[in-house]
Image (cartoon, rainbow, N blue to C red; front, side, top):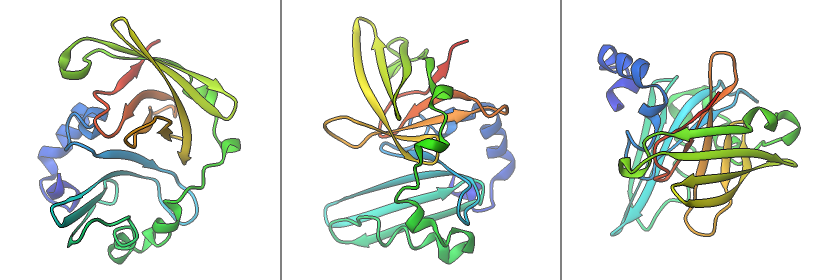
Length: 209
């Protein structure tokens, strides 16, 4: 992947991206804990697909940003207990000036008035499930200026809230515990066709007719 985004290995991975689409960018096909965001086209930024992963332990910390459309990958490795993002968010602009607003734009710019939550509402299904243990169903509904959802797997159902994070396709899952993000994917007609959850959220859910 690093070769692909930095200009190498194009033919092989172009084919892989074309055939797998969303699955290539899901946590099923990348390392544990990675998130995939759709960066909106606002301020000075050009829309992009961004893959982010960071962790720390045993006296070391690392952060990885991959900007798919720009074919740019930036990795930071350092001694210390962890980077809160202050440093790693500054570095991409060194290599691509169009990311000069990246650090501050990462903080938000979510405007409910610019988001049509009704587009996201619907029923989505993951036919694989965790560890291939069977299908999961996600029913998304609008509730004011946020989304609510129910995930059903077998006889178990979990209710969650999806709170807008930035852009129109990136949400935070309101849960007690580890950070969790949600991403809506759009087709060529600009309508949501799938939902993926970061940080070991399992395979993507695809919209049912």
